Image (cartoon, rainbow, N blue to C red; front, side, top):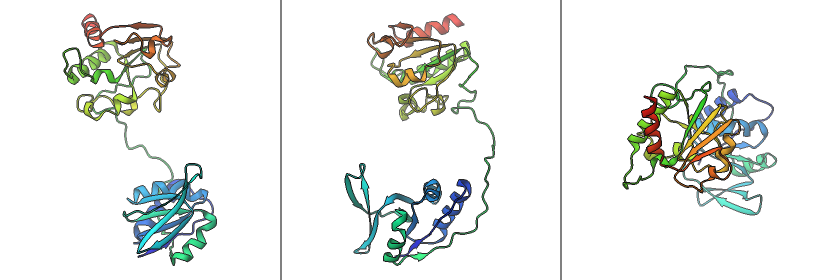
Amino acid sequence: MKITAFNVSGNGIFAVDTAVFAEAIRSCGAEVVLFPGNSRVKRSVAAAAMRASAEIDTNVTDVRIENDKVIAQRWLYRQRIFAEFSRSAKPWVIVVDPSLYGEIAAKLGAEEGVLPAVTAETRTKTNGLEAAGSGGESTIKPDSALLFVAGAGWTKKQADGALHFDEAASTITGFIGKANASLGSSKSLVDMPEAAAAFTFMSHMNQVGQTGSTPRHQKGLATCCHGEEPHVVGWRFINERRAINLDANCGWAQGKADVVYVADAFAVMKKVNELLG
């Protein structure tokens, strides 16, 4: 079993270190690669491991070989649980406590690795711009006066007990085009794989609230959204909030929207599109 240890210290640049570490992991040919867990390594080694298609574990306090298997140890859950584990995937990058790096490398008989010379770009280059989603025209319009947010309710079974993905998609895009509105989405909708084929115009770039954006539009209309706090936080810069939901007790009705229409969003938006021509 080949184990290589790279003793990295000092300061570095993320873009350069990531490229260098990735090449070191690939070219050393080791099954297990050790790094000291100092600030320079921790800043870049995870990205390097991903580029090198390697598995990685950090904050390891000990490594040993038992029955030809490498076993690592580390604390979990705020140092309340001590765990031992191993991985079958190779290469396996193990980032150990920097104060224990020398001791662990010596105990394992690790080969001392030399970082390769790699030329890396240190500035981000823009190769081009792509509209959110794959449906062509961008659905994100920061200058629009209206934000239209679609929730997961558009993908649920309707009154006839059937799913209407295509109808939902055409209704949403029809309104976005006619009203020149910007499109937002709940996280649950953009994460839903079964709706991806119909909702090609939507991506995680449309997500509002939670880990998404906080748009700034004059008005906002939420449809089929429950209106929980994360969504409202994402709406904190919207001046006028309205929502359409079949549930009169949804989150939007609890003082979080100026107007709540208790109605079927499919029927309401179909009528709106008709009125807009």
